[in-house]
Image (cartoon, rainbow, N blue to C red; front, side, top):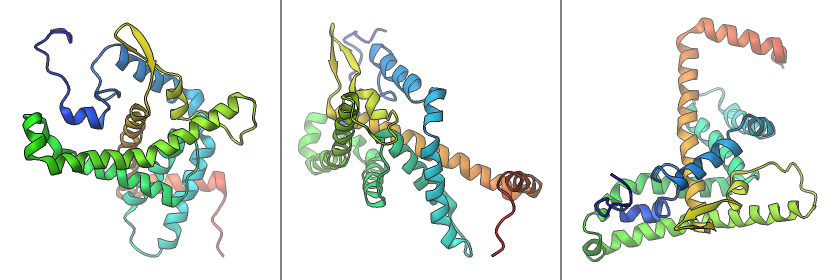
Length: 254
């Protein structure tokens, strides 16, 4: 059945807020918008040349991870928390193109996690939404406030990156400038009703939110699985240690 059929339901009301009316990859229906957003991500960010350009970012994140683990080397460590934080740092850098301080990263992490943890609570708002806005008005206020908090944190970062990109295009020297996800969104034009338009700031926030959420838990879970197998199979751990020593040299005994 075609999407234009009047019997096809529209997106749930909460999606209009969370996903800017289904204008991100995970919620958009298959069609011109979905193809545009997906092609942009795969060609501009996941392309091998882009992966190589972020080598300095990966070194920085490795330093962040080691710096967090080293003081706790003599005690049991919940490594998943540190993996998640390190991956989130990397994705924030890839998204906004800047190495943010701990306070800024924690602000972003906080609003993203609050939204993720609260989504199931707002499902009830999708049933009889007009009546629900009266009956569940406090929950609607909470939903709108969470979205506002997210925009308050992310929009300044989007604007700062757009400003930096404009200076770079005008020939100003920018240190270690690499393409960030926000850079690729600036020039995108969404096909809508026979014409094209630029993304709004809210739509950029939804796409950046999707980018941050999609990569953090999946990658950190894979790293946790790797660590579990290193513990389970000591022979693999020994072989890996030998390879590290072969490249980096033996550890400092001091």
